[in-house]
Amino acid sequence: MIRTADKHAKIIEAAIRVFSRKGFFHARIADIAKEAQVADGTIYLYFNNKYDILISLFEEEIGKIILEVKLLLDSEAGDDPRKMLRVFALHHLQLMDDRRELAEVLQMELRQSNKFMREYRLTKFSEYLDIISGIVKQGQQQGIFRPDVLPGVFKRAFFGALDETARLWVLSPDHPYSIEETANQITDVFIRGINTD
Image (cartoon, rainbow, N blue to C red; front, side, top):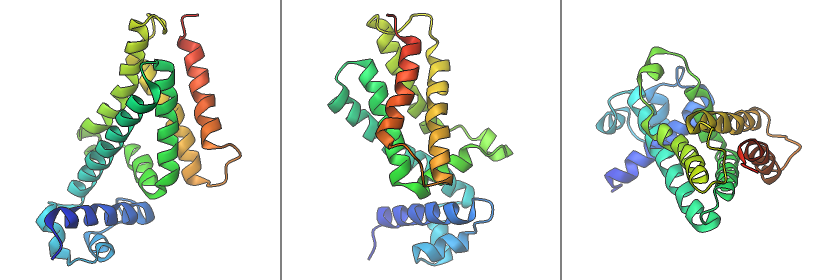
C-alpha cells in the first residue's frame, strides 16, 4: 500500500512531467492521473483541482530549492556575500539544467499573465528571491556592497539575468558556455556593480 505522502509526491512529479509536455492550460486531470498511474478520483483526494496542483507544485518544489540553497550557502560560502551570490547563481543554473521539466514549468507558468497567477501570491518564490536581497543586506552591513543599492531592486535584476539564461537553456539545450562559466560571468557583472571598491 502506497503511503499518502508518497502518493501526493507521485502526483506532483507526474504533474511536472505533464505540464512540461502539454502546458498547464492544455493538461487535464486525467493526463496527470494516467502519468501517476492512479485513478482520476485519487487526484481529488489530494487536490481540489488543477490549479491546486500547480500551487502545491510551486510551493513544494521551490520550498525544496530554498532548503538546498540555504544549506549550500552555509557550507560553501561562509560569511562572504560575494561567494554567496556565486553559490546562489551556480546552484540555480545547475538546478534548471538538471531538472529541465521542472525548469520548464517554473519558467512558463511564472510568466503567465492570467488572473489566477496574478492573484496567487507566490510566497515561496518571494522567499527564494529574498535570499538574494538578504545577501545584499549582509554585504552592506559588512561594508562590502554599496549602501545606496536597493536590495529589492537588485534581487529582481540578479534573478532576472539567471532566469533569462535558464530560459534559453530550456528552449535550446545546446549552449556554448558551461554552467560554471555562466554563473561566474553573471555574478561578476553584478558584484562589480555593487562593490564599494
